Image (tube, rainbow, N blue to C red; front, top):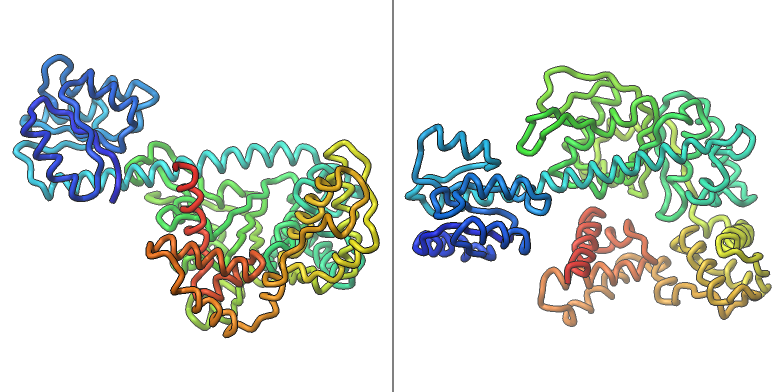
Length: 495
């Protein structure tokens, strides 16, 4: 475990002993010999944890802790007291001052390590949960504002305003192909089908969430919450709390009752994106909620009734996942009471011209200019491209073309389509792709994380950015790719 620890003690021998205990475990150590110095150093360095002696000249440990907790910049740093006074009154005073634990002198190295690592882990999980809750509250507030812009029933299939339709990409419904007409017919049926659960399948970028939104906003639940959740991006340690909520005191850092996704979506729709990546242990609990409509908070004693429509989406091969035990068959059948299959764009090429024209109109309007015409050579090139990134890829191509043309006529020179190696990767058989990846091993960096990231980026390039296909190619699940890419982004931000 990594982290920065501030040791506050006026006795150099105690500082050295604690440093010799913690430094070999990879912790970065900061030292302070009095309370004033500790407060200043904590404010500037933001350590992950503070080990604080109680008896010191000047500010004692209690007052130092109280001042740390009173300052916004240092209030969230956990403090463990180090004391030679094991009396109950001293311990109570330490907790009242804001400490999370205490270690008595003379201390044992193993005890120090266990307590430090435990509270660092608790603090990490607490911060992650707070971050998720903040993001969720902001998202719900934004969605509620969007729902206030509902238009009349005949304005759009989804019944949301034109601006919201554009923002959420309902332009995926543009087209005249038979496959699209079948999807629209399914959506109309499902809008009036009450609370029946729906499973939407299709490749990445085809518009599965758009279908889910159309089902919700076009039905009787339109004014209720539509809550999207990416199952592949939820930390396993927080999954149960995020889905089902928790009560105050359920775990360290749980200072208030927190509703889970099911209660937050009560009366509306819970959209479970990437449902194929949900951990098996959570699948069983999801099945229970689907069957009886009741959830129980973590550490609660009573169940709570919820009324939620479940719409799930995935590009996973459920037959394979069920056979390997990665997905419960009973949950699959419970979710797939009605299945909507969203086709890839290459299976409806007759819609490409209409979509391109629509995106041009949309982006040109945002730039305050009239939509330019598309030359026939550009249209031919678009219609002949396989678009393994589907509608999302087409949208990006059109937006870039509009920028590069400076509002003038768009020709083939303005279209930046995937290069031939990427485009043909979708047509390459799996063994050939794997052989090509094998030849790259000798040139990989000797750092495991860097090597993994290099392979993932190569696989994504081979599959046109399709994470599911890249995961199949590498023999891993999608969650692993999400984690690797997320860690890489964090490294770029902090470097």
